[in-house]
Image (cartoon, rainbow, N blue to C red):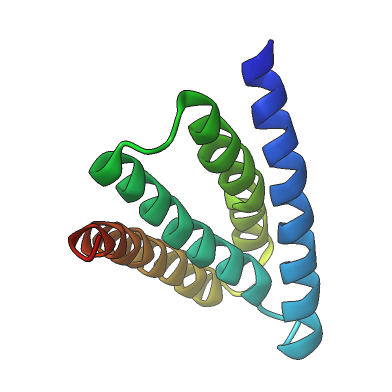
Length: 125
């Protein structure tokens, strides 16, 4: 039961951050392309890469901390269900293909960079 509470509390926080970033991004950039979801997915991928890398390289996170941070906050923050719906709903299939390519390439690149950053910080401590 405690595990569920850790994940739930983290998801609540992650969901709020997701809403704020998507809203802010759509006010600044064109609402005709899902830039907010792109930003959330890339940042979420960077965060999960970093946190998972820190957990591997330093073994400093307890099981509860992993549940709260990675499963809860980052899981509640990322929006792949929104990504799927927005891509499906885009009026032009070429724009949909561009969205898929950007989400996947930038997301995977961000995980890799976050993981490298986590291991690089281990060298300085």
